[in-house]
Amino acid sequence: MACMKLGSKTDSFQRQGQAWFCTTGLPSDVVVEVGQMSFHLHKFPLLSRSGLMEKLISEASASLEKQDQKCVINLSDIPAGPRTFELIAKFCYGVKLELTASNVTSWRH
Image (cartoon, rainbow, N blue to C red; front, side, top):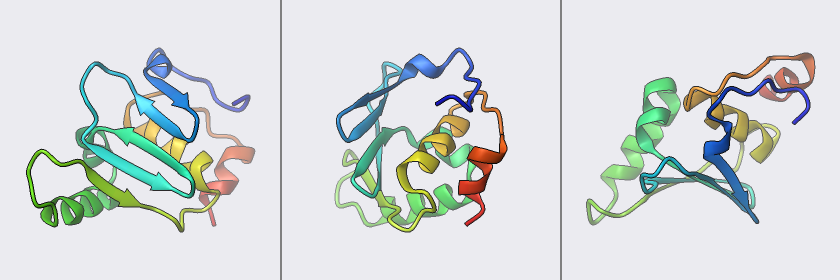
């Protein structure tokens, strides 16, 4: 994305088809579905940076039958869809983002 200044952690996010993976060496424990895109992430960075994600992860975890199952969260109504959530996920992981008129507009809806 041309409007982002990314920090050194950007290589930990890789897209494969309709899925984003955070490749930190640890298996993901949460999948966030946004439209047709799925984000395979880790609970801790999301919980520590977002009260909403903390609530959603807590609710989804409570409904799991087994502890080792992945949490799945569906965010079908997020403004601007997967592109916006990609920025949110990168923020939660500590990637530096440059806020500009073009990328902030999608967050305001």
